[in-house]
Image (tube, rainbow, N blue to C red; front, side):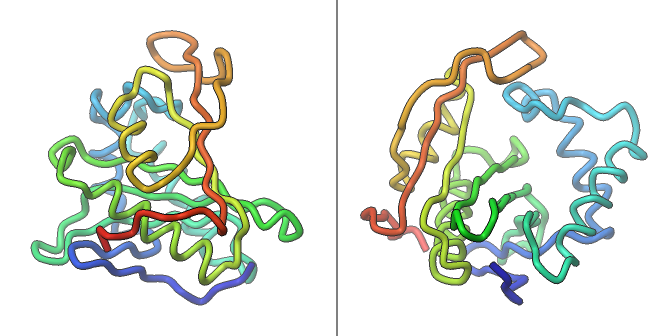
Length: 188
C-alpha cells in the first residue's frame, strides 16, 4: 500500500502530510478543551509533548511503505490550518484502514470534517486500493456520528467502555465503509 500522493484537494480544502512547521498549530489544537472532550490523546503538558507526537507522524509519513498517514487540513481560500486527519493501515493483505480526525472548534459545523473524510475515502479506495475503511467514535459525540454517516459509513456495532476519556470510560460506535458500498461524495 504505497502511494506517493502527499496532497489531497477538494473545492475548499487541502490535506497535506504534516511537517514540523505545523507544530504550533497542532499544539493549539491539542490544547483546546472542546477538541479534547472525545479524544483519548489528552491535552499535552507542554509543546515538547506535542513535538514528540508530531515527530512520530512525520517519521511515519516519510517511510518507504507508509502505514500511517497524518494530514494537516488547510482551507484553500484563507490558507489556514484547521485540523488533522489520519489514516492508519493494516497489513496489506487485509486492505483495511482506520480513520481519525480532529478539527479546531472554530471550524465546526462548516462541513469540513465530512469533506476531509470524503477526500480520505477517495484516497484510500482509489489510490491505496483498500477494501474497508473503518472509524470509531464516542457514543456521546453527535458531531462525529453525523460526519461519519453523512459520508456513507455504516454503524456496525458498539464497543463497551473502549475509550478512556477525561470524563471516564466511554462506549464507542464502530463504523465502516467498503469499496463496494454506495458513497456520498457530492461534497468534493
